[in-house]
Length: 489
Ligand code: FES
Image (cartoon, rainbow, N blue to C red):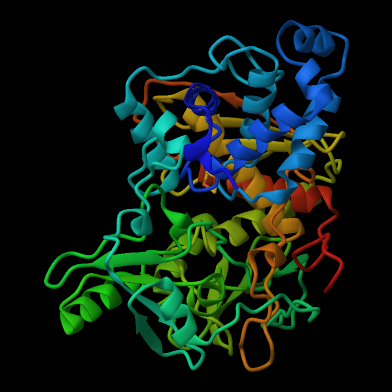
């Protein structure tokens, strides 16, 4: 097996620069593996090999770009990227295999891409969109985001969650795994559950949602020396709000103090599914006059949901918010646009319904909580047209990348994502593959138009996320439950 460190250094740099040039890497956790896949594809696929350089340009002019795009997306089926929404990765690959550079080539329908020459401005835009300190650049695409477990001392003890839910500590990973006795759980064939009922009433529109994972790729990890500050599980990104209350740093500090040694704490995917926060399921009923009720699921051990009330009422002033206790995994109001997104989507679709708008090509406009604005339409061919107003762009490549990522996440949320939970509240789908995150092949083309201004920079991708959710639900015919297209309800 060859990892990114074993790739020819010149080739490695070329891929890294290309990924950075088009915004194909955000947190950078997935990209080393993806670069290896694409480099191997370029080396093994005769058609791609012959399609490099001049010939690829000629093929593209002759209309073969779609075939190249399809082969790249197909190869990406082995991977998951939660941040970028695939498109920029495909663009990086087609550019590089075609001999163009990201700086030279402009993609059909996209705003002219302007790479900031100032890494601080790029990082500022990334931080605005990702909600946490974040940098980008070629080194990030090579996995240099500073992930906690990459920085841990080699002789650190390793702490894992054991079979009984307690913590086991071993001299190394192999010993800790043996002591834990745990085998990673699989996914289930159990139907998705909708823990809340819409209250009885004369509703013009209703919506129920299920348990949804933030599905960040980098699992919760931390390490700590005795008496020191633990490594943050948030390395180069905000994990969509999912790690803000992660207990792993506190546990690393406690175990380090108890053992007098550096300790690494690692959660498996199953641990993240069972212990990590989910988006709170909701049940909404709205009347034609815009008044209504939004019920929000509250589970034992979850933080207060009081912050949801203000944000929901700020976008849907006619809604009464009811918290309802249910059995289930933890929920967190800090997950991306939780609560207000659902309220804003129902409000926006109510207006479309009143005006009897067509199902496709109709733009939905949403203003985010901090003033960023987006207009999104699902086009007849299934592609997604995005316009965004986010003040001064700072770095259009980065802003565009986050907007495309937001579209990908919103489409998955509305159409395919969910985690089955049993009657006792235990999650049953325990692998990331079972969450329904859209693959590269299933993700439509996104065209982003950035409307620059010299106003103070604002988050734009959250408004894109919510507007895309509304546009997709509208285009799908407003089924009363999400996900709308998954084969199990
Ligand atoms: Fe792919 Fe973050 S850049 S998971």
